[in-house]
Image (tube, rainbow over all chains, first blue to last red; front, top):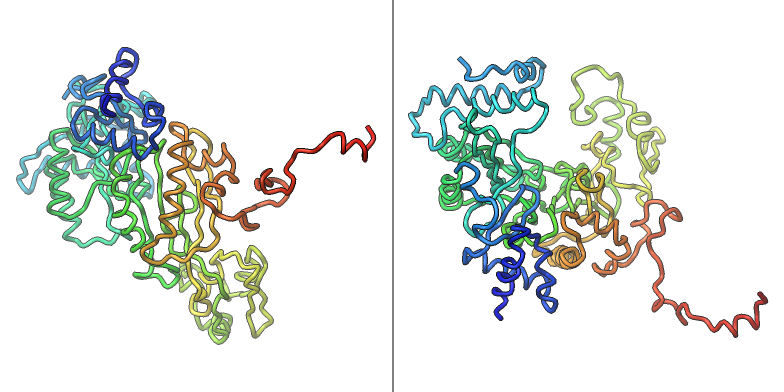
Length: 76
Length: 437
């Protein structure tokens, strides 16, 4: 399975309970890879618009694009 | 006539200090007049709605902003902070009111053209309200709507040759004092190292993968004009190794009252005749100075580079010639754990382009913190949890006495078993032959 698919499958599997994840939540998916390599996988998915960032301003999380509360639900 | 009555906010205008309330009212009045005939891209009365919403928060004693959001510009994980209010029907102008952080020019040098261009973008596409500057030093644009984000980003990057700042779990916008461009105390080129590291760490600035925020700050000397020691995870503070240079004739001129102490900075009232004993020698925190009536002497080995004597008598005392910086780790404000000042990691490092020594240290710390740091844990908290000794190990910095604040009360440096001949294990039978129970 491609690295990107591992991430998507993980997020889809959790989608009932949670829609946003910390960067560290993805590290156990790739025990042989360091954080910088995992970051490259996530960045690629963000650039392909499969993932999106959520930010409180101080912390940032990753989620599947369209999952959870969206700008549309915020009155935009 | 104001859109909302704001009696609580109005009180904030009554003191002798500048007031953000007056500033927002001024902006509201300007947008109502629209002297430039702009086609405002977000509601014209956004500042009025902001005043109304803040008044409501003061009255209710609770915030009416929701927490965070998804908004951003394509490919960036920072620089835009989603802000929505929870009373959109009554205050539609601030129903969505996102913040944008813009990377400030190094040392905060502006041309008036740059400032005007910033304001032109923001008058048209935002609320017109800015914060100069946020605590990382960014230019902060307060309040716009999602469709404007990419437009603003395009104009900032393509027309003004600047970039968004940092937010979220990113490297935050690096900040430097104005350094050698104006200051005779600067021990290294703060602006150059700040610019270089900003360029080199673009990925860390814009694509979040840290456990939490991470800040660099570069102070040219221990006066700390960007407060690196208290406000940055990785503080680079200028220092020197050799003696403070003393011009004895100029010292005498200060004592004789021919030169004004502190370059005349405290001339607002008569403090009496300058007293070198009282105002300089006795205030030295490590008591390393002596004045015998004609000669000032400083014991360099005891000097802690507090800068007080140099600040008081800048014509007589100068920083030494062997210049570089100290590196301190882990300062932070009181979120999650309490506030912390930085802890000294490297007492002296030459700071010279291409700054490989600094970058090598930074990257070792990041690699460790990205692996071991918990979510929302600043590097200072990781050090506190896992020990300073662990930090020394991962950064391959030799333990040194100057890293210890209070000897014997907190000996964070311990021998490891592989460093001790024979290790910890012992043959108990052999031991008992020599020692009775």
